[in-house]
Length: 100
Ligand SMILES: [Zn+2]
Image 1 (cartoon, protein in one colour):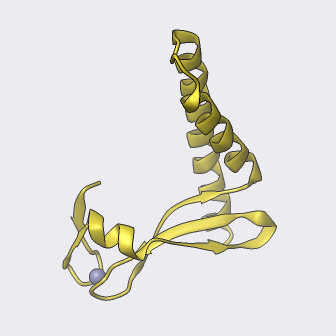
Image 2 (cartoon, rainbow, N blue to C red; image 1 turned 45 degrees about the horizontal axis):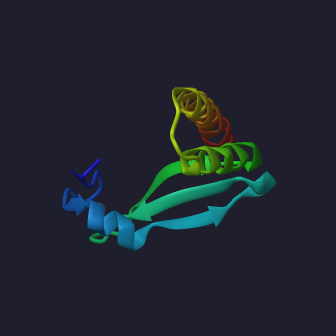
C-alpha cells in the first residue's frame, strides 16, 4: 500500500502520512490495535491487531531473520511462522471486530 484515497474525505493519503500518524492502542486481554489516521480528516484506519501469541511469533520471526547465512531451512521456518501470524491475525481481527 503506497497511497490511497481516504474513504471519508476522498483526499489522498500517502505512505509518509501513514508513517507519521501510526499509533498503538491497548485493548482488552493484552490485544494491541495498530492504526493510522488520515491527516486530512483524522479518520482512523486499523492496520492490524496483535495478541501475545502473535507478538511471540513476530519475535521468533525477527530472530530467524537475523540468522546468517539464511538457509533454505530457515527460510521455510520463517515462511511457516509468517503464515501462522497472518492466520492468527485474521482470526483475531474477526474476533475483535465481531464483538464491537
Ligand atoms: Zn480523510
